[in-house]
Amino acid sequence: MGLEGKTALVTGASRGIGRAVALRLAGAGAFTCLNYANNKKAAAETLRMITNAGGQGKLVPFDVADYQATQEAIRRIIRERGSIDVLVNNAGIRRDSLIVRMREDDWDKAVDVNLKGTFNCCRGVARQMMKQRSGRIINITSVVAEGGNAGQVNYCASKAGILGLTKSLARELGPRNICVNAVAPGFIETDMTEALEAEKEAVRKAVPLARLGCPDDVAGVVLFLASEDARYITGQVVRVNGGLYM
Image 1 (cartoon, rainbow, N blue to C red):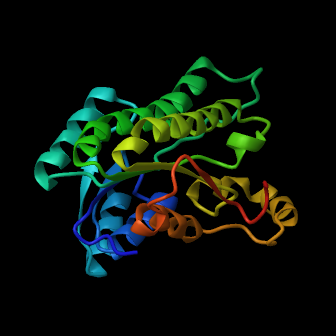
Image 2 (image 1 turned 90 degrees about the horizontal axis):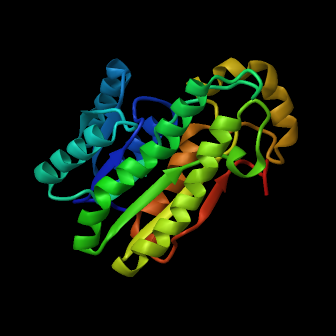
């Protein structure tokens, strides 16, 4: 599953699933552009890990929710590298609350980063991928996009929107040999889930594989979808959840 000579852009690459994905893509030979919004220190650590392992990459700070900033950042990458061959839309946030307590800003922020941010990045790479008649777009959604979860109507709605975006874009771009797929992780142990310690044991009992996932479980699937081995797979949702949702 070599990606030598390819350029990849991974959003939200400073930690968790994004970091694991960036490491796997760089390890397969891709020059990996690491997007982050605020945590420069963590993103720099991801880049250090890549270079120490013999890979190549660079930091590309921008807020995926900012349309203009995203387009400008992607244009710069294409000017410098010649193309973006793999886009992984991983950046995401949570603003959990029951709907009767949810502020409008909590709804807007989750949708802006998770869903609009995915659109912004797809919009940025689409024309160039169409011209070169090749490309991979991999959108990170969530198990709750299909199963729902109390207290997360904003997060669930934004992640469910990514499923519709993925399938529609797969139909649009398929004739140009561009594969667009989604990966739906289940309960993955990351910084984002550390605060849910009380729920972890209940989740373990509900998962047929009887364990929580790790970021590398997701990263391996992303690498496969980015590779030539997945050249006839598009418009699909790959669930990486240990059987939690079937």
